[in-house]
Length: 267
Image 1 (tube, rainbow, N blue to C red):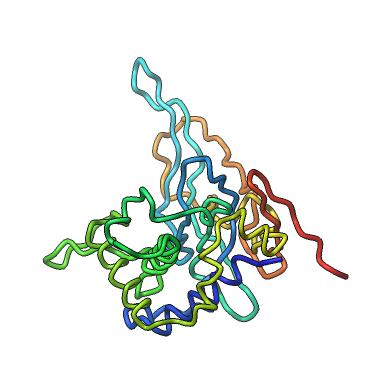
Image 2: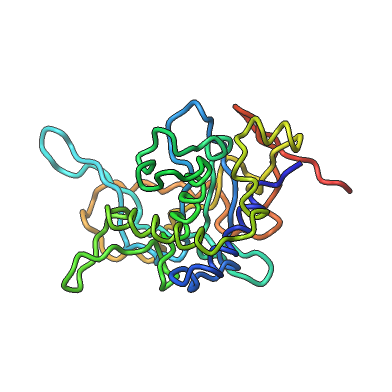
């Protein structure tokens, strides 16, 4: 059995230690987990989720009459908040999820980044994705990296041509350090090869799979203002998922080509 997310974390630690532009990352505040993503389906290979975003400004939903434009009803005032995730004594600020088996089957062939790594081994595409997600971690550790626009301005976009160039530069820096091949060996295998070699491919996940910690709505007990007196106010449903997570909310799952199942832990 191979725990794929454990291998990714060990590789991330080595990348952070060797690449100066990433040494600000405190990996104890980053949690890596697996999500299901079929190789024959479209979608991201991995995603970086920031938990350090502040609560939103107070807001509400509202409905208007299509003919008159008048508000007919509205919701209670609420804010959106990030959940609390703690593992041991560490508060987690970032979640990085990898879609299995899709990530395992990623290759440079026919990828947009193929020309950037001319002559490189196909598995470097996976290393690029890992560094890509790490580079999303903002140096302030309080959100997704902000892209500069010049003159002190920043963009709301999370990707730009310069972002991709920076990632490629960091990947090449890491490879130039000649890291221990044992750390990257798992990237050289696709999903079928991993199963043939290790028997099972597993990874960390949340017990409420496929759910994972995401921003939620919290109703305000003290409403800022009655925007439309006399308009009916609808109650906002409480969040249907936990708002606080600990290590007890983590589990190990085995992934196959199209599904996953929880691995029973030995007593």
